[in-house]
Figure (cartoon, rainbow, N blue to C red):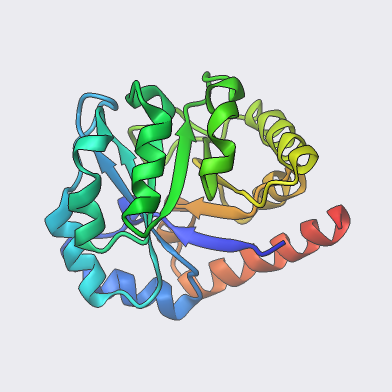
Length: 225
């Protein structure tokens, strides 16, 4: 299994965004996680397609765009055109989830579906063959800097078990409260795409932090092989 580290730009210094992008790329980021919030689905407002397009112009790694917005199907084309490489929609945010994830693939992008902590895995059971990734929120979405919810470890384990039984090559992404000192827990549970915001941008040396995370991922992965 391949493992990826995706710094969340929500915790970056937006006044120096291009510099922050270059810094985490040089530090070893595999993806850039971009949180889009509408102030309705989650209690915060962030960015839209123009900022994603600006990030794309200075980024060299893929953009992993997480749409925390109601009716995401209305904006898929705009974010695809802005440069998203991965588009993830919330199961809770659209009444036609299969149609939304299928449309993402039609646009030539990788398709993801996200679940809030209290949402059952059954909400995505019938679209697993249509997605490239499932994002399990490990905090309640809307704000950066929150603490990891320990109960989510079991949810990751259950999803990985379901995917293994079905032999589906679907990535499991975790987002919320992940830092170098707890990344091993989610990797042992079955996650392989690690989002970290303040866990990276809140540290003084991005390179040292990402290297530490990667070392802990390798150790954890070796015990699950």
